[in-house]
Length: 367
Image 1 (cartoon, rainbow, N blue to C red):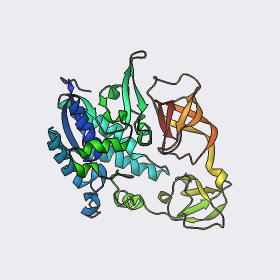
Image 2: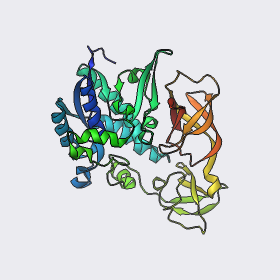
Image 3: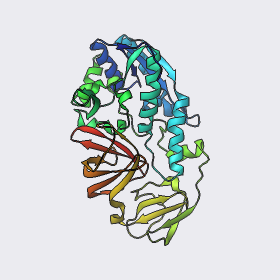
Image 4: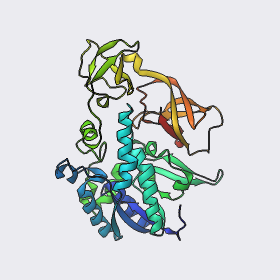
């Protein structure tokens, strides 16, 4: 990282035009920080009508720029709209496409946090002389004097907690990040603050799913933005017996039951996807459960690296309940995760994130 003359009282807030980032900026100004609002232009799909991107399209919507500009004026902070489209395409969209090509189910929000919000935006903040970046994430970051490490804890508003999406932040990044919404008890409490100065923002619905695919047709998105084609292949069982024909592996994800395009007279689930052979493996209910996984690209926050077996809890998707498990270190920055109880639909490409109570231990990508 370049050496800039950084002011610890200055913070750049990523402004999406939504209620969370708006209240984050408002709170930081009230705490005495010199706050700069930045809206990141990330993506626009020319194929979709403008109306798809006008309203409730999250951080990629056209309306978000004007909403962010307006609330910055009301809060009384400077506002910049900056173009991050190139880094977003390279680190989020291209990764998203590549994962589907290889039969995996990506998590673009985690990639965006790592490479865009807390890397590219942090670099921009430093250029502006700001020591910190801040976002409207529901999570707590603090310095632990005993270990001299920056640690992450779940938000007080546990139903909104977003620690799952920030497991791969580094110590260098964490020391420059503020997340003022972590102390709030609920989203309603955040909306109440927003309603004091902008009713329109306070009533905005939460952004859903993937921001750069506002129509939620990710297969259509993949076809428009890559050379992926619907290539017919076989449904097979775990023994390799052909069960039928599918219309392309990008249409499926592990654990899926509906929308297979074929009926079998009994519930069948996607158990695995073999991109090399263009095959989708199906099985009955029990086949979709497993008690272990291998994760790669592992990052730990609580310590530098895993030295031996480590008992904790893990979530295999954002909405999952933490499940008791033991981590075992493997070579090449990988870990084996063995669960006390089998887990449903462990999905390659998704994140597995480790917890010890409310503390975020770290996480990796399910391999």
